[in-house]
Amino acid sequence: MKTLLCFGTRPEAIKMAPVISALKNNHLDYEVYVTGQHREMLDQVLEFFEIKPDYDLNLMQKEQSLNSLSALILEKTNVVLQEAKPDLILVQGDTTTAFIAALAAFNRGIKVGHIEAGLRTQNLQSPFPEEANRQLLSRIADFHFVPTPSNKVNLLKEGVSVDKIFITGNTVIDALKMAEKKLNSGFENDELIKLKKLLIKNKKLLLVTGHRRESFGGGLDKVCKGLQKFAERNDVQIIFPVHLNPEVRRKVFKILDNHPNIHLIEPVSYPSFVWLMMQASAIISDSGGVQEEAPFLKKPVLVTREFTEREETVIAGFSTLVGTSGEMLLKKLKGILENPPNFTGIQNPYGDGVAAQKIIEIIKCQNA
Ligand code: UD1
Ligand code: UDP
Image (tube, rainbow, N blue to C red):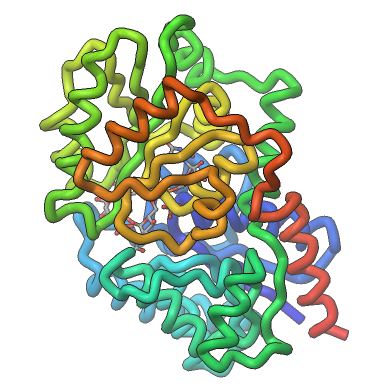
């Protein structure tokens, strides 16, 4: 049985990297296909994990629209499928690449395995368009690899057959462990050396990311204004690797550029970001992956969103949903700095770093 792994953006690549490793270590037949929905941010991940795609469509266009991107992916994936002739396609998460590539495979009668299935906010506008992408994907997938028991419950409620759902943990923990191991064994590069020089030892690090489309209407501006206010404190330093989406960059640079306590930097490679998370007193983010990684590193996250599909980390106490008004963010941030939380003994909800091998074992069973 031949497996085709398909992905297109930074977070998908990070979460697929351990699956590629596992397929390789198990000597299974597979090929790697990237749509190139992202370019620079995808390449950073491909380089770190030494992934060499068999197909790279290089589709990204500056300021691409969801529909033009979708149309390109649908048409071009068809050609890749014709050539690669896989029996199974594996997609990850809830991006346009994940859903549209799965649709192309479904239309050709190719089985679809969905990694990180079952996440839900039940609000099609938040996150947009990701909630729709993952719900639609669940309608056409043959295998649903869910990170947590509550993700399984979500799918059962939608009528997905129990024998198609497999609880595996999230492969992001596998990837994080790979990066952590490399960092602990002395890995360094120019970027990391530069970051180490940038940090001031007696200031607390607040690490920030943000890119959600549903925040473009005003939420991201308010979060930035909140951060601008907080940066007046002299005991903090903010590092914000700014996503390459031009809409994000316009907003963030307009409000936060040229502040002595705020460093707006380019997106950093995965090991550098993991290192930054390790140094942080608090992480402020609307990212899906970061909400999953922070509990493993025992770091608090203030989630700048109105809804989250990662409710396990909120329940466990690692994350706090602060919305996008900026007010709750400032209050909670102050609280964390005054009373740093202690997460000793609290289990990270996303698994122990063996999700990829669990997925491969299930694929092997289908093979038998
Ligand atoms: C996409 C995903 C989102 C995911 C996020 C991870 C969709 C609809 N959105 O959002 O689910 O959480 O990636 O980061 O699938 N750009 C570059 N270089 C890059 C990447 C992006 O220049 O390496 C710029 C381009 O101008 C591009 C724009 O960002 O047109 C938007 O990229 P796109 O993938 O459409 O949306 P994201 O906001 O990155
Ligand atoms: N990340 C990274 N470099 C950065 C910022 C984030 O490597 O400068 C990693 C982060 O550790 C996480 C992933 O990128 O694994 C999250 O990607 P993003 O926030 O773009 O997407 P999401 O997870 O929200 O879909």
